[in-house]
Length: 453
Image (cartoon, rainbow, N blue to C red; front, side, top):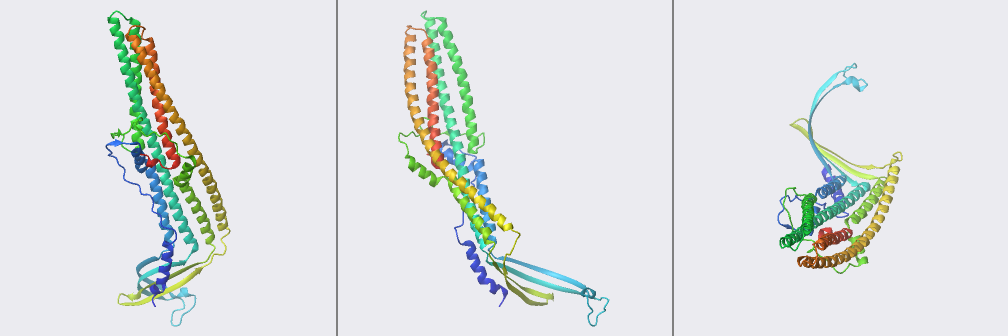
């Protein structure tokens, strides 16, 4: 029976062991970057685009791919090792090197050869049992799963950054619109002041005040345009798009979702503990560390390997004979100078470190959910207060303008009211932006930023 046949069953058995156990991990695949995006971009679109193609997310995806490659490397210790070679070999021998005289040969040494051989051969080796290698494979799979979860967490963070950049761009647009409204009001007041002076019922001081207000609003308008342009650049960077790309925001701060109901706290915490990718990564890292420790301990066990080769050997191509060899080898570790014990201690310490970090991370997740709910509730109340204040200041401006137009008073009251209106508009924009930021913060705490609408 040839060596190949003797090893066949061993190869089949151990190959099944190598691919068995925990299901193989499919690592996250980085997708091609969309550098030619066109159309209206919603808040959810921005979050998902950043999670898919931002630089940090792409880097994390490739790190996960490296971990998946480590699974293949760990599996190779359990799969067959097959090689082949062809060799032509020539040798001459000095008989004196044998150390004793051979009958019929010169005792002082005699040259034999050259002897030429041709050897064509295939080799096969197969691990039949190696518990340490199996444990290393399981650890590599858990590490790959942890890397996938870490990549998902990095993608979530990129989605958060893009969402906040989107909200800053919306806030800048809203501030610009508010300053444009202030500019319209200032121009209207200046026109009224000029008309009253021309009609002989006004004073030059009212015109001067109105002009100063126009100049002040113009300066604010310039700053608002600059802030709008800078916010767009930051958004493009967060999305991984070229800085000359044109994007249109599909939403405004006033059109984004606002809910009057708050999520249940306990249900939200349970959802976060179940869905957050950083918690999943910590769980898998702990499992991988424990399996690594077990793999080191398993190195104390014997391992069983089978090997064999078969080929043709002869002095020339017309004189070759079939030869083969096979064997089974048992390796038993005896003593390695306590190196293994040191590695076990190091691995156990790492298990304890990860376990402490994991428990702290779960507590942090619960705190983040509670804090996000508090921020969301407070921001919702702030929006209501800012809207009420804006309505009152709009009434104040309208009443002061009517009095000024009727000549009952100068425009000082109108200027003062318009300044208050300017502040109220800014406060409402800030309140709306804070509320939407709180929504993003809650989604981050729950691990669901990429599911935003």
